[in-house]
Amino acid sequence: MPTSKAAQAEIATRRAGLIRLRRQGVPYDDERITALGYTSVQHASKDLIRALQEARDREKAEASVYRQQENERLDALLEAAWPRATTPSPVFDREGVEVAREIDLKAVDTVLKLMDRRAKLNGLDMPVKAELSGPGGGAMQVGPVGIAQLRDLIRTAGDPDPEDDDQDGADSEDTEDDDGA
Image 1: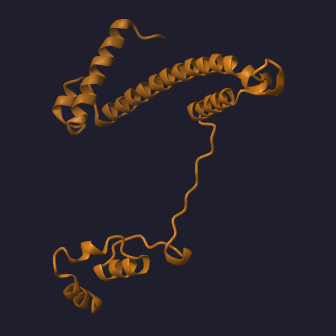
Image 2: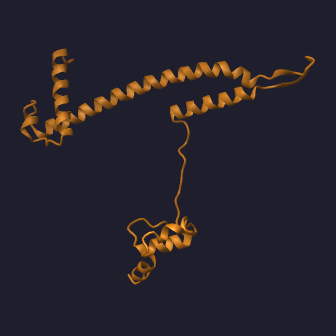
Image 3: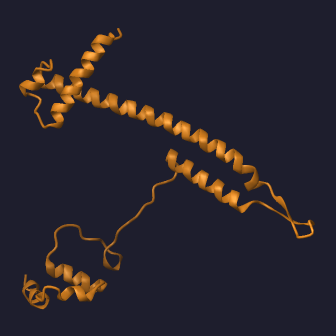
């Protein structure tokens, strides 16, 4: 049975209060949350999850409407540019004599940009895969490293700005201490 408008308003007010309190870090078992009308921690937690899910659903619906509208605009622009990009047009010399038939390369570029925009809008492009590797193509170390290891990496890769090394004047002394560690 559908909920009445009064009940919907009451639920919306209660959920808004719950969200506000939770954003402030108030725990579920706090009396301020109980004062909103929640009978248990589970009840409040479940209602928060429902509220967040409804917000996500509304956001998805709005995004879907926006995407559809943008696709329709792209369709209209593509329809206008497509004939000039695909149908050769006559090219005339100074005397007005047809010397060739060519497609409009500017229109081709426009069509490609429209198609790229559509692919991005609709998530059609495959994600770009990137892989990081360490020196010599081997595995890259992830985790804490010591100063000596960092200096070894700089020596291996080459210091991009050797003048920065002597800013504190203690660089050569630190190397001896760290190599023994």
